Image 1 (cartoon, rainbow, N blue to C red):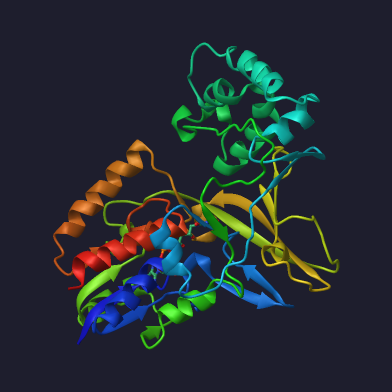
Image 2: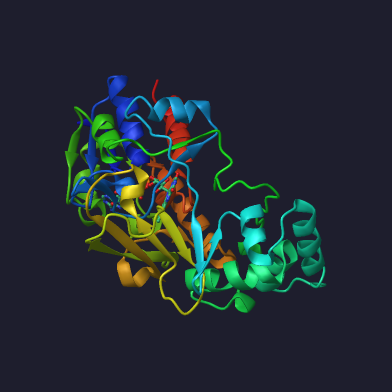
Length: 363
Ligand code: FAD
């Protein structure tokens, strides 16, 4: 008999399994994919670590999360400084003085502030996402850098999207292209999979095993179940389907040393169907003579079967809460991770939440 059956070998399940093993608990991890690591999985090709499920940049202001992850890998000093390409015009992100100087041929923060505040004041009433974005950054930035990108992401026009999707749009009046404000940032040298391998060292893992397809039989094997999969799937969708947005990643090998000169380029015009191109070699400054790029196409969850971004609108949250109530009736069941909690979590928050659960439930 196992103490814990852990469903999912992503970061949440793996941190919990590691902590449980340290305290002497016997764990079994089941994973429906053919590899461990969940969405942070990376693999090597021609000396380049490929981020299979989209660019993963570790960034945090939490000393605890940073110290924890550094036990399992050495991090480089990668700083995310993405570029936006709008109809061949190149802008720096996040919105900062480099962006404004390119957009309006100005030099000082005062000039930028004047233009933005004049454009912001044109919006008198906020009825949709378009109004919301213009009221935060003005129409030039909205038209060139937000509109097309957001419409591709959500598959709907900005004037039909609710304003709540964008709560803040950080605008920086400094020449600073560092996307994140966090104290720590980097990429694990050698990729993310080694972190999961070390976390799961000495723990039994069964790959290609979908818990939901053998729920009864697998549940009998352990005293407790930590479930990190989608909550509606656990209950066989008995109350209905939760909705997500997904992405299709198209990986290409390019016979060039340096394709775009930076890890991330956002394509912000609507006419280009992908939102971003990731060039993987820049994460770890690989000297490979070839390169790999991934184009990211936002798609409906039904197309890929991969639930990436929960759609936390009213209807979905009501459904999720019904499933959560149902989950409370199952004494063996513990929920954790981004899927079971129907939320988006960065990696640092995932580690912290898993450590919190470990502290509370592993004596
Ligand atoms: P997952 O990684 O999804 O792991 C869940 C695992 O459970 C999966 O392996 C899945 O196959 C398995 N599973 C599900 N159902 C079953 C079942 N029925 N039976 C068996 N196994 C099952 N975070 C950052 O900090 N920085 C970033 O730059 C960043 N970029 C991201 C980009 C994208 C496109 C996405 C989607 C996320 C990004 N994240 C980023 C977030 C990061 O991926 C998550 O924080 C992390 O993966 C969460 O780990 P998890 O274990 O909760 O979930």
